[in-house]
Length: 86
Image (cartoon, rainbow, N blue to C red; front, side, top):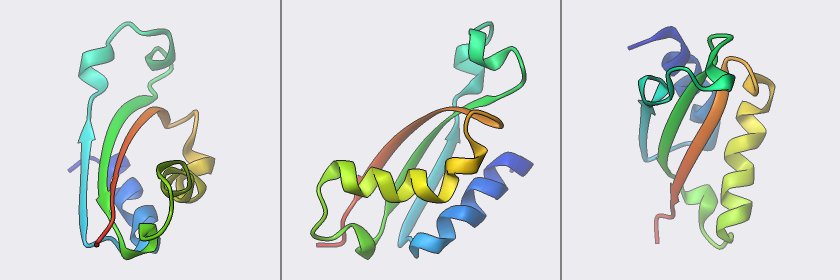
């Protein structure tokens, strides 16, 4: 597991995920302007009870809030798939 994925995982632990998968999609974006400085593209699949009762935008906002200082470097792009527990 890369250091960046570990860092993302550590940060997202604040959301008490029941399920967490982080996929490094950077290789799919080689040559993309945002990846030239070494920043990565990631997909996050996360399930948390904290998402219950929130709309999708609010769920994703929680994810961005804990990762905000990592954007735009070392995270250039982030695809988020949130799941509730109910």
